[in-house]
Length: 114
Length: 340
Ligand code: SF4
Ligand code: SF4
Image 1: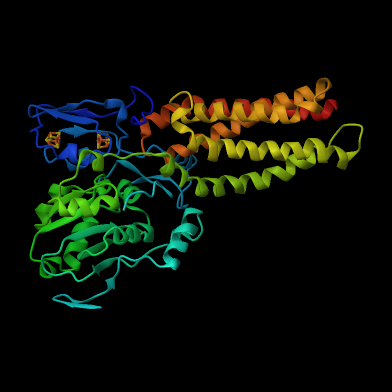
Image 2: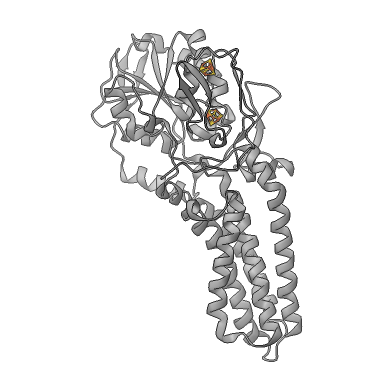
């Protein structure tokens, strides 16, 4: 079955071709096959499939990718809007490693990963 | 305990006991989930030596168990990071399965003395939290991203750390959606169990046949309808997700809700006579989709392909639509009770 695709034309992903060296790290970490490489050049081939997980941005050694990373979780958006904190379910939290950026803590989540 | 250069290391096997499996089952239902952990640290799987691979995971027991269960007959070190009992992907999103935590663990566990090579294997879904190049820079260990699923690890290890494109792509199969249903169901059930008695009692209002007779009719039907909405939102929508119309989860849930309201109307068919009964069933044609849409919207958090920007966009229309349909349905239903 083909990949499931969420809403179109909303994703905040962008690639700075001037900074990109074509190292391919982003291709390795992306779980949605968003980025593609042909003849040594990398570009965003499947933008609408991007889930804004931020793996590519975090692992690009040359800072060529930017994306407003977060987890697409309605409960997190609601909890954050209501100012709820500390519960076990989803909350958008401040990331420990990068200040000023909001990253979520998802709850049960898809447990398929190891 | 295995005696090593860095002291005794706890040994684990790749066999899961009945107790492990029972724990997984309970966790799937949300029971004891927040305390389903293993101690962070290093573990020996099989008889690992200086050249054995190092695999990193989270201290959510399900993550740890899946990892060891996928490697029968293999020798490996398992490095468990303290993610407060959250699975790899979610912890990576939060940053606890992150660069700093990993660097700290590599150093405090004295990994350099334990193994002679300088490679560590991380699950690919840990990548949102870990900057591989920064880990190499500060520890000398090169991060290799393994496959998404633990089941693919043996092939990955035997194939000189090569992951096929299939191993790198996150799927969302019917089974993968199905296992998420119990915990969603339990969460939604709590609300339904609070609301259902209220509807049952309100359902007894009006009508010529006396309170309890009416409650056993309209009130009981209301309870059926609420549970139908619950099933539509947290069971049927996830199961039939790819085949429901639209992209937004709320829309999918509402369509399933309308379908289920239709089934309710058929079931109720023989009883519909006169205005109050028609209003009553019309009310459920608003209430069931409203609830199902809301439950479905919450499933975005468990899905594997929604983006935060997308969810925000969906919620801009979905939340008003759910509230609007909910209020309309409630007014119609209460109106039918008053008219009866
Ligand atoms: S990781 Fe960065 S530099 Fe490497 S190919 Fe991707 S965008 Fe280009
Ligand atoms: S944010 Fe995630 S899904 Fe989107 S391109 Fe980057 S790695 Fe892929």
